[in-house]
Image 1 (cartoon, rainbow, N blue to C red):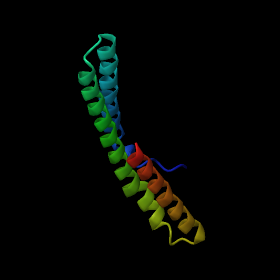
Image 2: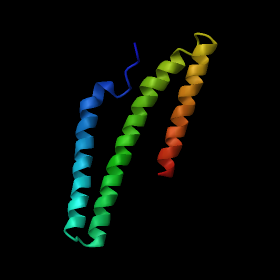
Image 3: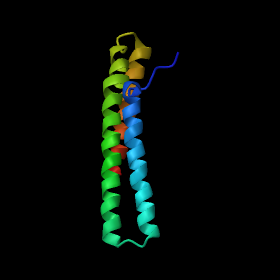
Length: 102
């Protein structure tokens, strides 16, 4: 059996947030279609970007508290468990780095 993702228990909440963000992006398309003033479009881009960043941070928090924590708790089960924990930590670090660069 595969392990459920850390966001499994809050999946519906995440989907609602993503639908709101999708609506923001559709609003941006409408603004461009309607030749809305550049600064107004950029303001909405900023809002959509912040919403995605907030979503990403919440998802990262759940990943750390569920997936990484579970791997670390299994790290005492020998070399394979320790390797899994190190891989999860490295994976999370890389995700943080991508978020910081974006």
